[in-house]
Amino acid sequence: MKTSAYLTYPEFMRRYFAQRVQKISVNPGFSCPNRDGKISVGGCTFCNNSSFSPDYCLQGDSITEQVKKGLQFFAHKPDYKQFIVYFQSFSNTYAPVDVLQKYYNEALSIEGVVGLSIGTRPDCVPQEVLELLADLSKKHFILLELGVESTHNDTLQRINRGHDFETSVDAICRAHNMGILTAAHLIIGLPGEDRSKILESADKMAHLPIDMLKLHQLQIIKNTAMAKQFLADPSSIPLFSCDEYIDLCIDIMERLNPNICIERFVSQSPDTWRIAPNWQLKNYEFVHRLEARIKERGAFQGRLFQI
Image 1 (cartoon, rainbow, N blue to C red):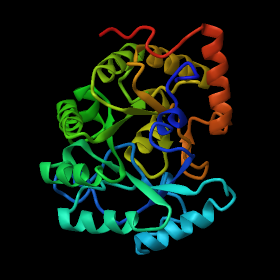
Image 2: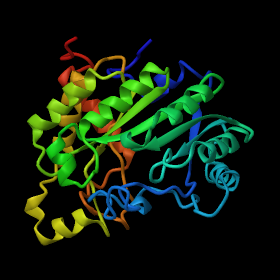
Image 3: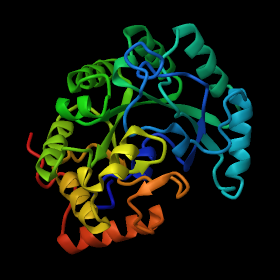
Image 4: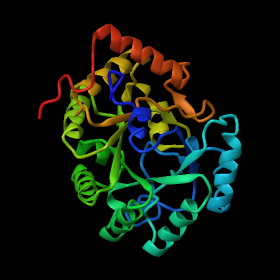
């Protein structure tokens, strides 16, 4: 039973596990078609993988070595006995199927690992990859995380994403039809997207067969094309204040299908990488402010959702 105003990640995961499960990130060293020349060499204008990859994810270490380091990193959480390996950096389905199978199986063979979360691009999930994930999901928890980022094709072109929204819809529907749990990522506040366009994205996502949604506030990260644009003219990329973003998150939440888990509303890159915004809040402090505002507004997930 849902006990909060929205379907939280812990509530969603209790459907599959009797105890809490910790995610451990790994970096198998895959590339991205938007960087290696297949689509482009510049990558997305907002992207610097170093800004969100944990320090223990050292490319060159085996998956097993990275997981062991991750276990040491989370040793202060002794209550966690089960773990999901999160293939996070770059596009983690962008390799031959036999290579993917080797990495996935290595992760699943580690004691305590009960599943995988696989981050990738919507244009990197050919049918043979989905067949592999569907097969693994018969015995393990498998979550496919797709970087949708925006539902507006003009925005996707502007940020040099390299695929359109229709590609995301196709990938989501194909994965769903094969019984694969699917999460979508959206960046809130991308250049050219005002409140009306963002809420239009919420309405579109609400009607797709996704199991989970991750929201990320736009962050201006060092050593990116977007950072150069922002530093040259900050007014060219307006950023939300924390309170503005909280109210926008609630507006999005109210439009979503109540069966969609909202894994998170916010992410924080390290201060050493982030140029803006600077809200001076830890993630848990943000969530406390968000939930207080939800209560103040009497809001709840699905209030404005229309079938």
